[in-house]
Image 1: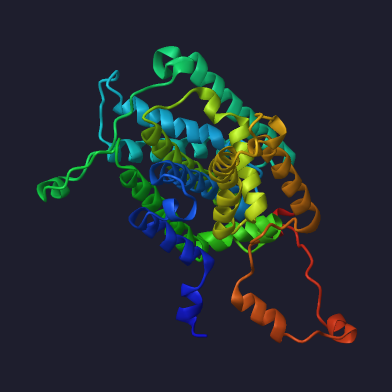
Image 2 (image 1 turned 30 degrees about the horizontal axis):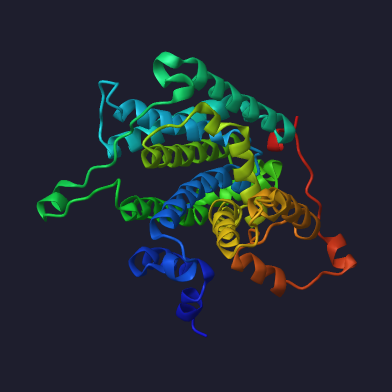
Length: 383
């Protein structure tokens, strides 16, 4: 099999092709007997949450920093978009300007959070990010003059078509045609995947992974661990802000502050654990399996049970939605027991694998002839 054929047969390429063709071929009606509008709307939210999971994967998967406050940046991105676009504020900028502002604002906020916490690791960093998320949520709730309190801000206007498209006589109705925002969210997801693909293979991406594997060893070879972790915090927050902008625009509202609570961060982390930390394809798989199971598959199965006449008495035990949390918990327990690295764990580079295979094992006598590396005064920060 040629390299081109193996690339075309990859599941993620096939999934992308199905996502592109589904609205055009009405695959939802053919495969699931569901309306294309409802399933397409749910798929749009899956694309948005996939962007959010990829942002969390930059911090947790690439650099190994336990982050439990990604929902806070998700909410900040949504509220920045709403403040700049809703009619109740004088700004009323366009979608593109609001998107750029949301990404920049959350990126700077992520850097501001990461700067004082660079020396924290493990549980301590998790507690700080968790507390930051709760502070942001209560601030969004209590600053009613700015954020609208529990009501949120609305209506967030839909994007406008570019001028050159309008000159061609093409009009768009974002309220009635779900495909417009469907393809917009899909394009944003693909753009993020392409960005992370190149970053992962760049010098910065290799530095992220080096810090994740051994921060002390990475510092010894000249990597500025503080700067590397700070860049991961900023990029992860910026991607969360992008997802928040898309989320608010799709909902035409910011929703309430409770939509960006700790449970949102936990669900995104569970998606990474299920799919595989440090692998963008694993993050996508985790989102589509977990959130797709909850938001797409469960309603379809409930509708099929209702139409088939199995649950005519309305028993809670015969409703699939009442069992989904138990099935989700059982799946996580089995994953942590039998495959803790996830379904698609991050793999080492091909060159590293070849070197490991081609290098013969040395005998004990040969190893003894190699002088050991000792830390001299001043080396790697030793005194």
